[in-house]
Image 1 (cartoon, rainbow, N blue to C red):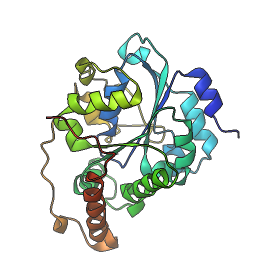
Image 2: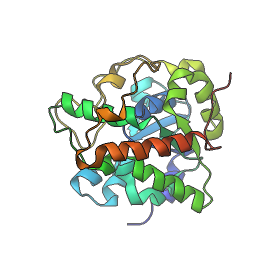
Image 3: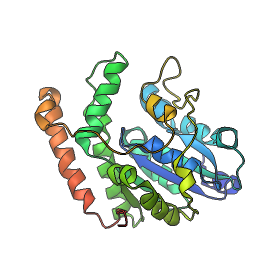
Image 4: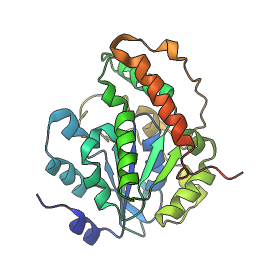
Length: 264
C-alpha cells in the first residue's frame, strides 16, 4: 500500500500527531485540541487494533481515513485539520510512517512512570483482567526509541509532562498550540461529558475502563495522585526493575530542552 501522506495532506489543512505511553492523560490532551476550531477530525490510536489483533498497517491508515468528524462532537469547525493520537508501544517500529504524515511538530507526552504503570494495572483490575502484561506495554521502551528516532533523523519535536499540562493547562496548551500553528483560547480547556463515545478500535464491547474518566470529565483535572513507592511494584517478571529504569528515563526527559515548561 502506498504511503498515505499525499492523500492526507490533500484532504486536511494540517496533520498533527501526538504520541505517548499509556495513562499519560493523552486523551485529555487530545480533547483540548479537539476543541480548537481548526481541528476538524480526530483519529484515536489507529495502530491499536493492529498491535493487539495482528492487522497490517493498511488497517491503521484506514482508521485514519475514517477519522471522527469533530463537528458532530463539539460543534461547527472553521478548519479541517486532522489530529492523530497514538500510544507509543502500539505504533512501535512504524513510528517513522506515522511521523511522516505530520505537517507540524510531533508532540510526545510523558508522566511519572510510577503513576502510568500503576494506573494501567488499576484499570486492568477494574476490568477484571490480569494485572500482568508485557513490559513493552508500559510504552516507555517504545517512547525512548521514538525520541531517539527523532534525534537521529533531525526531526524536531515537543515534549510535554502531564503534570505540567494538568497543573497549568492554559500556559502549556498556549505554547503547544503555538508550536502547532494553532490559536489558543482558554475555553478549549472545558467541554461537555461524552460517556456515549466509543474510542477504541480494539475494545468494542462493554465498558471501556481506559476512557471512562476522561469521557465523563468536564475539563482538565489537576494532578492529585500520590506517587507510589518502587517497593509497591512486584519484582516478578522484572516489573520493579523496569519501573526503576523508566523513572530514570523520565527524569532525564524532564531536562530535555524540547520540553515545554509552564510560564510563571
